[in-house]
Amino acid sequence: MTILIEQPADLVSQVEGEEILSDTNDLVLDGGFVMPKMESEFGFEAPEINSFGHSFRDYDAESERQKTVEEFYRLQHINQTYEYVKRMREEYGKLDKIEMSIWECCELLNNVVDDSDPDLDEPQIEHLLQTAEAIRKDYPNEDWLHLTGLIHDLGKVLLLPEFGELPQWAVVGDTFPLGCAFDESIIHHKYFNDNHDSKNPDYNTKNGIYQEGCGLENVVMSWGHDDYMYLVAKENGTTLPSSALFIIRYHSFYPLHKAGAYTHLMNEEDVENLKWLNIFNKYDLYSKSKVRVDVEEVKPYYISLIEKYFPAKLRW
Image 1 (cartoon, rainbow, N blue to C red):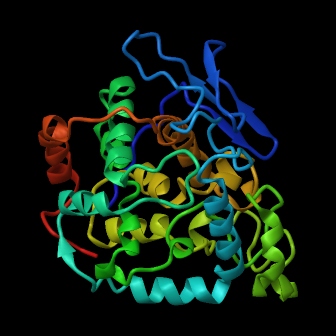
Image 2: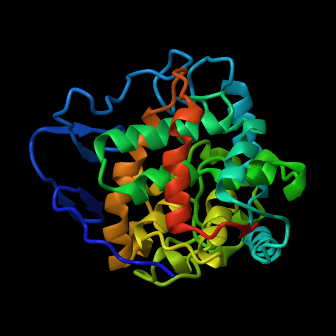
Image 3: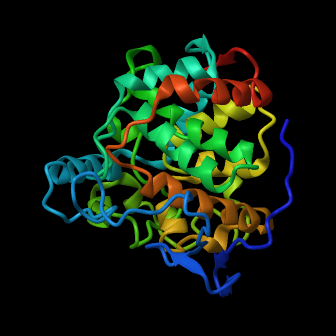
């Protein structure tokens, strides 16, 4: 079951031919989206550089991770096809791998490092708590958004043996639609030349196999942790609002929320939910740092949220 929440008046929407700004005291993110600037001196402040000393999402910077990241995207762009994704959704949609709680899954992520991320090489539990705590400071009354920050990357457990130990290209990285043309804004776009779908004329128009305004829920996205965690949350009966499920499913869809691509496939509900995703993106991207979070100190709060929005045990 999901519940709907009222959209705050000061959010921002940017879709094809439409831009709504709230006020002039705003922070402009690298995707061109405007975020409310917090007045409190204790609010989250976005840093200018990542933990490696480079700009965020700089895929050309000569860092120790740049070559690893580019090779990751080469493999991802070659192997993520429409048919592959359909097989993965069918297999993992059974949710027959393991039963465990949300917090137990958080602890599993201590064993995961994301090779696609140029901004972070810490275990994922650190990033989850950094994101959630940063949101909590600026939006203290939106507990559903705090929990979304904590759980948004839990699908990365697909990298672990218990879940089939999928290759990195099948779990992490920016996501994009299959069944229509690969937009030029997708990072390392050149590697799609070796993707089998690039040879299929049905998949190489702007709309491809879809209708304009069909809604993102009807669009097949590249397989990874986003779609998997969305399936886990939805099929286990979470009571998180629809905006939370949208964030979980599309937070890696940077061609949409960074470059404004594929907006022609969105419906009205997507437009509303994108406002919350743009807010979340600030914390997901810019909260990555070497600052440690005291897990035991914040654990009781997040356990209470898990109990509020999820059953004790989930099928994964």
